[in-house]
Image (cartoon, rainbow, N blue to C red; front, side):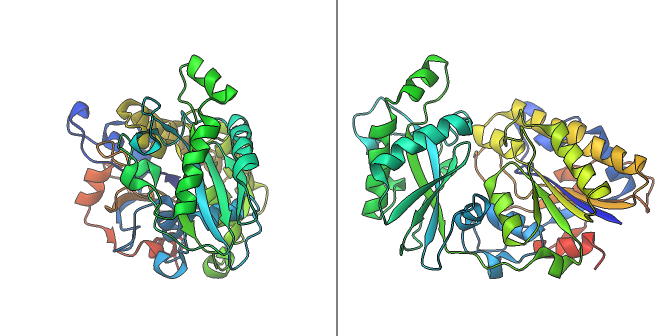
Length: 400
């Protein structure tokens, strides 16, 4: 038996007027997911524990079977694991986004966050920008590390877990009351703007109509994580396929194999075919029993506030990830159980994460029902099926 989690990050949403009162998942053309829903089971699952902030960190830990209330120590430490940062117990890891701030104002604190991803800047360009920051700002106390695209890491020696605001939570808003209270962190962010605003890369980006990556933004502070191997809990050998450091870091922390896919970038133009083939290879050729395939695109399009692109990201998930994986496993003669779900909603109307329950689709190749089925929030909620503790979903998938 093979087991799969196919996760469309931020795929869930709320009804949208321009879609006729449907959600992007409900509006999108998803023939394969609807077919699986007609043969399987749909329902709702609560992935964000009550009282915790909604995010891909807590939610994906939950989906993998780790209760975030016990095992969550911050987002950035998980990302630090992914890029090989040597964390000490006394270190604090912070996410360092390279964001786009408005440039018309003279005062840094009068600026507005335009884009948390700087037009989804490529890693190669952003690494050059981060190096410029590192040369000016790095000290024995603060060390910068390159991650992926706009997502990087800052390690604070003997620092503190301070409350910081995620940039995607304040898109289009003035930053004055969103800056760190810690004077050192706030001053580094201000200085980073002076370093980056007129960098040659950003001058060229603006000529091309791209958002400049003109400021560091620190958030997601946390301590070194302490997770146990996934195989100890699930009794299956697992692998992770994702473009983002957070998911790779969770895999490293839980001793899962990280599968790198060339061209997987976390955007709408990611290498879907490569990810689908990697999932098939790891299950049918490499001796693994479990694979977690994570797609970042729907979440990014939700943050961008693009209804059209979020619908397209969901359709790509159905057409280019789910369909070839299902057909490939069937052709190989494999029995498999698959759960498809978002980690959390990223509603277009707020352009950030929310903590509502999300729809799941459970399909078992051995137990095919015959009914009319559609996979979306409305149908899943109407089913009456509810998993109240998200970290128990994995037990349901694995028939534990």
